[in-house]
Length: 338
Ligand code: AHM
Ligand code: MG
Image 1 (cartoon, protein in one colour):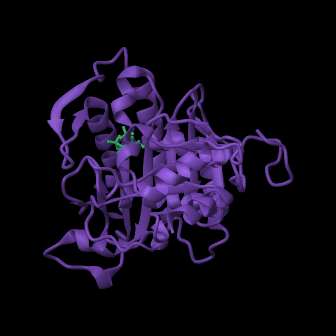
Image 2 (tube, rainbow, N blue to C red):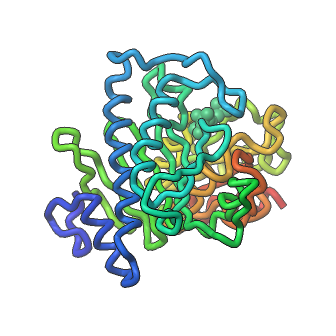
């Protein structure tokens, strides 16, 4: 744990941290903290399952595919169900949407409709095609306040289609060599490590800043032949003497690739490709939360044309190109794209 004036030398749990954050919002009722604690409970349960994946019968394909036509791993479904259960009984969640649910799910449990004021969108187990080979995977989440002006009884998804700059909170959990949770409520980016022996997320560092410039580019270069020309030119530049050159690092799990970019700086790219002309990553539950965290840490996130967080989503599972990383690296990319 870092010993700074902001993080005194004592154990601070994520619950304590969230409650302290809430003190900055005098009108807060505690409901939002209650919701976040549902996410941390799900994270601990998913982490325990990921850690024992080779022992439990949870590895491999479930035999089903999701709305994107991708094979669902058994752990994808288990993680999805875990989050559903941990949020569904909080009483203040109106709706959830997930990579693994074809349609958003309206939640009717809880005191009354008015109390159900939050919407949570998530990717329960990102990078799940890596599970069988023991590579880091993660959970990504994004929280919105319900906006009754968008409500359309015939189409519950309409309430979910809010631009990223409306997010109240976002974060991810990376199940790596340790389990780490990173979150923001718009007041900086904070990181916690799960102590598995006591089952608590303990504060590791607060107000994380992404370095202004990094030395790493992260992209599936196997697809480079069909990247937009500007991206191809940028990747060529990364290999020149003028550039340094940069090192290439690509795990193939967005959460793990972004976590490295957040802490060490650099740039992550998932451009349009021949196979995925709109990019592969999903705007609502992958790109938006990552963009919120990146900007809160002093970095940038775009689709090559505009800020990710300004994009108005048209559908729940919409895809987007994603370029995210250190400010200086992103500005350099932008010059190659225009
Ligand atoms: P998933 O949500 O189905 O796991 O897919 C998303 C993953 C990201 O974690 C990662 O950045 C990307 O797909 C990797 O894609 P590719 O294998 O095309 O490089
Ligand atoms: Mg994913």
